[in-house]
Image 1 (cartoon, rainbow, N blue to C red):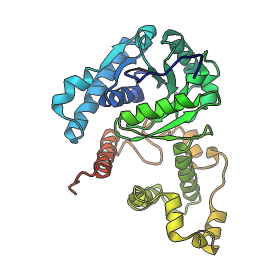
Image 2 (cartoon, rainbow, N blue to C red; image 1 turned 120 degrees about the vertical axis):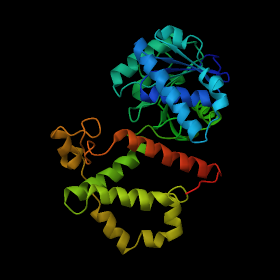
Image 3 (cartoon, rainbow, N blue to C red; image 1 turned 90 degrees about the horizontal axis):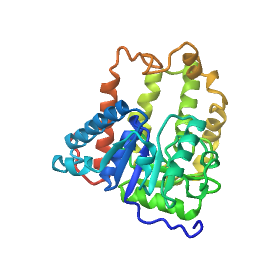
Image 4 (cartoon, rainbow, N blue to C red; image 1 turned 120 degrees about the horizontal axis):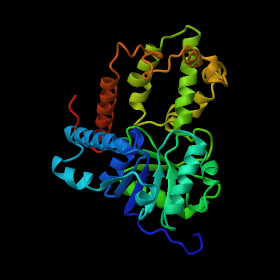
Length: 324
């Protein structure tokens, strides 16, 4: 440990950033029994976050994942602050959840570290920025470790834990312990671009985008294959488990070699329909069009259906009965 500074059991946390992810992480920690302060630069952003958190809790009640009688207790664990020093004053765990901008994240983390107690662990829920880069500006870089939550953070159990080059092993262990205590499934990942989760997403998207770009298949067909086929057995069968089940002689055979040789190896998304759509100003839901026309599909309804499906999986994994 650093200069005799120990990491006590973390009872209080601070979440920096009052956007969608920050609000979800605050709710996730509160559901796990941690008292948390949510910080936002503007008071109005905190009002929006408060409403977002309330809506998130209401959805959990509707889904049967939380009790309405616990509402005051759980939401009462969350306080709100527009002053950074106030937000982190007594926090044992400080996690930043602002936009994916290295300089902005570094500045916020450095400011929070200076105002937080010396024993506090600092963290970021970055999707891909290197923890080694993020911790390079900190006075106590050994006490920094990425905790990458995925949306919706109050539902998805998996959290990537990514130590940087200067992170002490005891700090990584403390973050893993905190996440596990709040009902998450932490997995320690290497400090490589995309960690593990995003690398899988990009590998799948690269292959499918390449096929769409060649006119061989539609986005709808790819998404149906993924959701109704491949993904349906993933909760029970990982990639290496499948390889062992099928037999490594098959995975090293002529058919597998032909598939591997034919897989896309394009190195720049701009060379695929992903980049072509972006160049045309089509950025997805936000602009109303991407691979799909979101003026014809309701984005809010889509997100709710996504969350309902995740709830189904959460219940199944917890051993609960799901009525089809």
